[in-house]
Image (cartoon, rainbow, N blue to C red; front, side):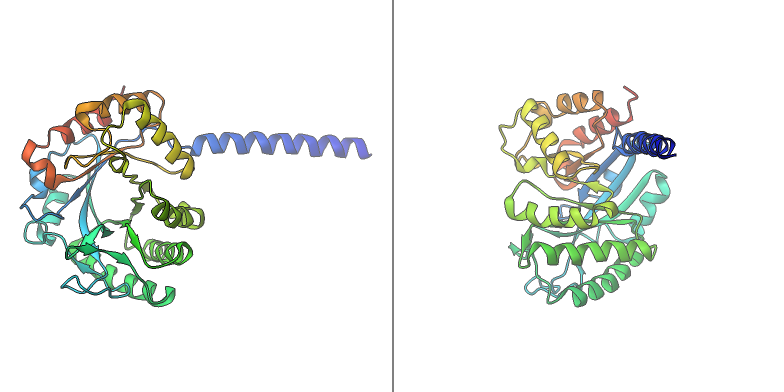
Length: 306
């Protein structure tokens, strides 16, 4: 009687392995038509309606930024967020208008950013519980006031350890999703040891709640080549396994692989390998001067079937 049982166990094990392998392949990210753009940080009067929106992509504006500092930008407020983007041109009525005009458009807000009031914007919680409580309350209010759809996490400076950051941000995302306040959440790390230690801790514990990784590939050197960009993309995809890591460029001339130097060549290669999970741009404010040329090209590439 022992032999049939052994055969049964082996058969079940084989079937389970086959099923697990199949589902993991199915769950792996593939090409996507997500296009995302940061907007509003530089107060140069850019409007949602200035930016061309291809109807054949999923378009996300990311308002930049909401920061848990007082309105003067001088003191951290432990999760009590205030609005620091250009609300004159990017207010609640403009959010509603762009979403009414474009069924494929969503608008989120990005948290943190590099600086506030000419100084660094620090993630600086007093405690996990108090920060989460304040953040859930203040962001729920802002999201409802401006009719927003999601959040992006873009803290770049830290006065906390990685575990505290992970628990604060992870619990915030989970609570906002559980409460039906947001439809999506993303993170925006870049290749810096301190930054990565915080975001990788968050990913390990809460990666299943994070929809997109807006990796700042433009933080790499300005001399980045196409092959280097592909290497960087593969390395960061390994760092954030299972994540939708988006390709990115900036239009402020700061760094990385630019559209002029082969960004779209790299994207076409990723697309041919089923690895182009989307594109994001920093930022609409900087692109206004060139007529959003590369935004149009990015969306055309994402919308193309080949």
